[in-house]
Length: 171
Image 1 (cartoon, rainbow, N blue to C red):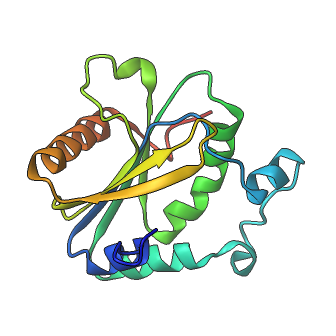
Image 2: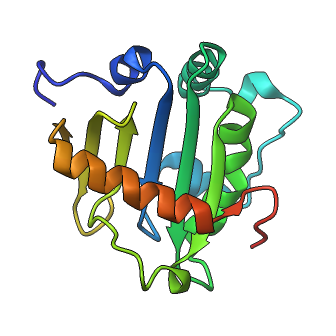
Image 3: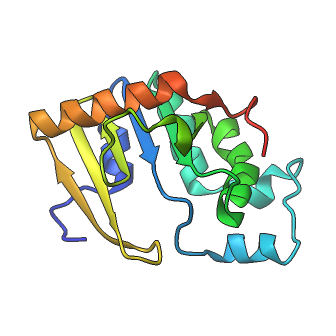
Protein backbone atom coordinates (compact mmCIF):
# COMPACT_ATOMS: atom_id res chain seq x y z
CA UNK A 1 0.00 0.00 0.00
CA UNK A 2 1.34 3.50 -0.76
CA UNK A 3 2.73 5.27 2.30
CA UNK A 4 0.01 7.97 2.21
CA UNK A 5 -2.71 5.36 2.76
CA UNK A 6 -3.40 4.91 6.47
CA UNK A 7 -2.89 1.46 7.94
CA UNK A 8 -5.82 -0.44 9.40
CA UNK A 9 -4.45 0.24 12.90
CA UNK A 10 -4.30 3.99 12.17
CA UNK A 11 -7.86 3.98 10.85
CA UNK A 12 -9.13 2.13 13.90
CA UNK A 13 -7.14 4.31 16.31
CA UNK A 14 -8.72 7.43 14.74
CA UNK A 15 -12.20 5.94 15.08
CA UNK A 16 -14.46 7.63 17.62
CA UNK A 17 -17.67 5.60 17.85
CA UNK A 18 -18.15 2.88 15.23
CA UNK A 19 -16.29 0.50 12.95
CA UNK A 20 -18.20 -2.01 10.85
CA UNK A 21 -16.94 -4.71 8.52
CA UNK A 22 -18.93 -6.52 5.84
CA UNK A 23 -17.55 -9.75 4.40
CA UNK A 24 -19.12 -11.16 1.24
CA UNK A 25 -16.88 -14.04 0.13
CA UNK A 26 -17.17 -17.76 0.90
CA UNK A 27 -13.39 -18.16 0.85
CA UNK A 28 -10.28 -16.03 1.10
CA UNK A 29 -6.66 -16.81 0.36
CA UNK A 30 -5.63 -19.63 2.73
CA UNK A 31 -3.39 -18.80 5.67
CA UNK A 32 -1.16 -21.07 7.72
CA UNK A 33 -3.76 -20.97 10.50
CA UNK A 34 -6.41 -22.25 8.08
CA UNK A 35 -4.10 -24.96 6.75
CA UNK A 36 -3.29 -26.07 10.33
CA UNK A 37 -7.02 -26.33 11.06
CA UNK A 38 -7.47 -28.39 7.88
CA UNK A 39 -4.79 -30.75 9.20
CA UNK A 40 -6.85 -31.22 12.34
CA UNK A 41 -4.99 -28.86 14.66
CA UNK A 42 -7.27 -27.07 17.08
CA UNK A 43 -6.80 -24.00 19.25
CA UNK A 44 -6.64 -24.40 23.00
CA UNK A 45 -8.99 -21.54 23.80
CA UNK A 46 -7.96 -21.75 27.48
CA UNK A 47 -4.36 -20.84 26.48
CA UNK A 48 -5.01 -17.25 25.44
CA UNK A 49 -1.31 -16.44 25.18
CA UNK A 50 -0.97 -19.04 22.41
CA UNK A 51 -3.67 -17.58 20.14
CA UNK A 52 -3.96 -13.90 21.11
CA UNK A 53 -2.60 -11.71 18.28
CA UNK A 54 -1.85 -7.98 17.95
CA UNK A 55 -5.10 -7.66 15.96
CA UNK A 56 -7.06 -8.98 18.96
CA UNK A 57 -5.36 -6.47 21.25
CA UNK A 58 -6.07 -3.61 18.82
CA UNK A 59 -9.76 -4.54 18.85
CA UNK A 60 -9.82 -4.82 22.64
CA UNK A 61 -8.12 -1.43 23.04
CA UNK A 62 -10.49 0.20 20.55
CA UNK A 63 -13.59 -1.23 22.22
CA UNK A 64 -12.24 -0.07 25.60
CA UNK A 65 -12.26 3.50 24.20
CA UNK A 66 -16.00 3.14 23.55
CA UNK A 67 -15.90 2.26 19.84
CA UNK A 68 -18.47 -0.37 18.83
CA UNK A 69 -17.01 -2.87 16.37
CA UNK A 70 -19.41 -5.02 14.35
CA UNK A 71 -18.69 -7.61 11.66
CA UNK A 72 -21.28 -9.20 9.40
CA UNK A 73 -20.58 -12.13 7.12
CA UNK A 74 -22.77 -13.10 4.20
CA UNK A 75 -22.35 -16.80 3.53
CA UNK A 76 -23.62 -19.51 1.22
CA UNK A 77 -25.21 -22.61 2.75
CA UNK A 78 -24.13 -25.26 3.08
CA UNK A 79 -21.03 -23.35 4.15
CA UNK A 80 -17.62 -23.71 2.54
CA UNK A 81 -14.75 -25.30 4.40
CA UNK A 82 -13.24 -21.84 4.80
CA UNK A 83 -16.41 -20.47 6.41
CA UNK A 84 -16.51 -23.48 8.74
CA UNK A 85 -13.00 -22.51 9.87
CA UNK A 86 -13.93 -18.81 10.14
CA UNK A 87 -16.85 -19.72 12.35
CA UNK A 88 -14.47 -21.69 14.58
CA UNK A 89 -11.89 -18.89 14.92
CA UNK A 90 -14.52 -16.19 15.44
CA UNK A 91 -14.20 -17.06 19.12
CA UNK A 92 -11.10 -14.82 19.07
CA UNK A 93 -12.98 -11.91 17.45
CA UNK A 94 -15.77 -12.11 20.01
CA UNK A 95 -13.33 -12.45 22.91
CA UNK A 96 -11.50 -9.34 21.68
CA UNK A 97 -14.77 -7.39 21.71
CA UNK A 98 -16.24 -7.59 18.21
CA UNK A 99 -19.92 -8.25 17.70
CA UNK A 100 -20.26 -10.78 14.86
CA UNK A 101 -23.29 -11.90 12.88
CA UNK A 102 -23.87 -14.32 10.00
CA UNK A 103 -26.40 -13.95 7.19
CA UNK A 104 -27.17 -16.78 4.78
CA UNK A 105 -26.86 -15.48 1.22
CA UNK A 106 -30.31 -16.79 0.29
CA UNK A 107 -31.77 -14.15 2.65
CA UNK A 108 -30.10 -11.26 0.76
CA UNK A 109 -31.78 -11.39 -2.64
CA UNK A 110 -33.80 -8.22 -2.06
CA UNK A 111 -30.86 -6.26 -0.60
CA UNK A 112 -28.69 -3.84 -2.54
CA UNK A 113 -25.19 -4.97 -1.64
CA UNK A 114 -21.80 -3.61 -2.61
CA UNK A 115 -19.55 -5.79 -4.74
CA UNK A 116 -16.65 -5.71 -2.31
CA UNK A 117 -15.87 -6.32 1.34
CA UNK A 118 -15.31 -3.13 3.31
CA UNK A 119 -14.64 -1.52 6.65
CA UNK A 120 -16.54 1.67 7.48
CA UNK A 121 -15.19 3.98 10.18
CA UNK A 122 -17.55 6.39 11.98
CA UNK A 123 -19.85 6.34 8.93
CA UNK A 124 -17.46 8.75 7.22
CA UNK A 125 -14.51 6.83 5.83
CA UNK A 126 -14.44 3.48 4.03
CA UNK A 127 -11.66 1.00 3.38
CA UNK A 128 -12.80 -1.13 0.43
CA UNK A 129 -11.02 -4.43 -0.18
CA UNK A 130 -10.30 -5.56 -3.73
CA UNK A 131 -9.49 -9.28 -4.08
CA UNK A 132 -8.17 -11.47 -6.84
CA UNK A 133 -10.07 -14.59 -7.87
CA UNK A 134 -8.29 -16.69 -5.24
CA UNK A 135 -9.25 -14.38 -2.37
CA UNK A 136 -5.96 -12.53 -1.89
CA UNK A 137 -6.15 -8.78 -1.30
CA UNK A 138 -4.94 -6.92 -4.39
CA UNK A 139 -5.57 -3.43 -3.10
CA UNK A 140 -7.37 -1.51 -0.38
CA UNK A 141 -9.13 1.64 -1.49
CA UNK A 142 -9.77 4.46 1.00
CA UNK A 143 -12.70 6.77 0.25
CA UNK A 144 -14.80 9.37 1.97
CA UNK A 145 -17.17 9.84 -0.98
CA UNK A 146 -20.43 10.68 0.82
CA UNK A 147 -22.69 8.80 -1.59
CA UNK A 148 -20.61 5.64 -1.44
CA UNK A 149 -20.20 5.86 2.34
CA UNK A 150 -23.98 6.22 2.71
CA UNK A 151 -24.57 3.22 0.44
CA UNK A 152 -22.10 1.11 2.45
CA UNK A 153 -23.59 2.20 5.78
CA UNK A 154 -27.14 1.43 4.61
CA UNK A 155 -26.08 -1.93 3.17
CA UNK A 156 -24.35 -2.91 6.38
CA UNK A 157 -27.29 -1.97 8.59
CA UNK A 158 -29.74 -3.96 6.47
CA UNK A 159 -27.49 -7.00 6.63
CA UNK A 160 -26.95 -6.55 10.37
CA UNK A 161 -30.67 -6.36 11.05
CA UNK A 162 -31.27 -9.73 9.36
CA UNK A 163 -28.14 -11.55 10.42
CA UNK A 164 -27.89 -14.15 13.17
CA UNK A 165 -25.61 -13.45 16.16
CA UNK A 166 -22.50 -15.60 16.25
CA UNK A 167 -23.51 -17.29 19.50
CA UNK A 168 -26.75 -18.44 17.87
CA UNK A 169 -25.60 -19.31 14.35
CA UNK A 170 -24.74 -22.99 14.13
CA UNK A 171 -22.75 -24.56 11.33
